[in-house]
Structure formats: C-alpha cells, structure tokens
Amino acid sequence: MSKFGNSEFPIKLTNDYNLDYINLYILLYKIANSAILKLRKVNCFNYMVTSKAKLNYSKVADFFLAFANSKGDLLTNLKLQKLVYYAQAWYLANYKTPLFDDDFEAWIHGPVLRKLYTDLKNKGFYLSTPISSDVRIKNVEKDLNNIDPKLFPFLEEVAKVYFPYTAYELEFMTHQEDPWIKARGNLEPTDRCTNIITKPSMCEFYGKRIQN
Image 1: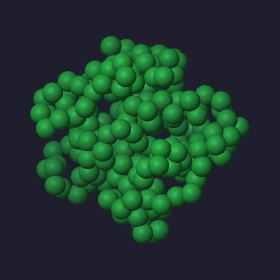
Image 2: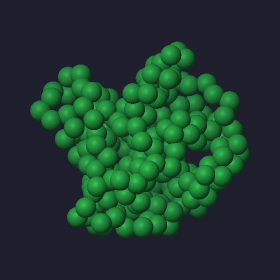
Image 3: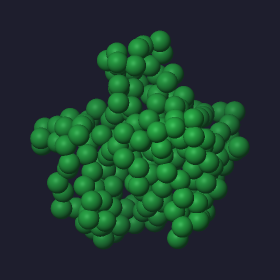
C-alpha cells in the first residue's frame, strides 16, 4: 500500500481553497517521499533536460485509461490530461528526463497536451466527455515492463495519488503551480493561451518539492 494512501493520510479537497492549497502541498510532500517516486534526487541548480524520452504520450494515456477500467471508472479528456501531466512532472522531477517528448500548453483549464486532446476529440471525446476504452491493465503492464520495469510501478503510484480527485480538482491544483502560471504570463484567467509549459520549468518546480 502506498505510504500516502487514504488509510494513512486521508486528504480531501474542500471548498476552502486555502485549506486545499495546504493539503495539496502535504500531498506533494508525501509523493516526494514515496519509495516509488523518490528514486533519484534532481540537481536543483541545473534543469537542462537532455535525455531521450522513454515513451510515446499515448502509452502513458493508455496506462491511465487501463487503470480506470480496472477500477470500473471512466476518465474524461480533461482528467486524463491532468493525470498525464502529473506523470510527466514527477518523472522529470525524479529523473531529470522526460517520460515523453511532447509539450503541454497552458490552456484555460490547465495543462493540455494538444496531440492527445486532438486524438480524443477526433474520436468524439471532448474535455468533459467520458472516454470509452477497452485497454486492459495487464496488457499495459506487460508492454511497459518490456520497455523499463520501473515505468509501471511509477505510473501506478502517480495514479494512486491523483486518481481519487475530480478533473476540476486536478485543474485547480495545476492552477496553483508555477509551471502553468508562468507559462501564461500576464494573461487573464479566461484568455486563450497556447504557450508551452517548458520541461525545465516542470523539472525545477516539482524537483524542489522533492528536495524540500
């Protein structure tokens, strides 16, 4: 069982955003000290991300869709985007290497991977539309283990932490964090934005959560 699982440290977002913000960073602290995620510390003085990515973004998305299926649940495009984002963020934080090469954009509803959004939109799955998928967790596990045995437990740990939250709770979390905020600059909350959330900014921000 995860060291920060609900049985040991229950965290629930409420309508009190100040409390939510504190709880979020307690949660991030728990992630940073997880036996799965804290596999290697990041050099906080150099955030150049140069190593080749392990996966295509679609394999990461397939993991979360399979995880949802294993729980008898459905994901929306919006929630899937945030789960994939946090997987990339914490992989960068731990390994200073991207999980996949594609970049997120700082959209109104938080980080969005345009290619993934377009893939799903073309199948009729918009931001709030539940995604139907028959991908199975055992098949995904086998596929990931053939690439790197650490990938499946890493993604599983990310899922255990973030899956209980709704799409809009996850969106709120990303709106409190520097990578999305800085990518949008001085734009208003409702302004359309396609600015890139850079991998070095993600590595720096989430890497410091591990160091603290």
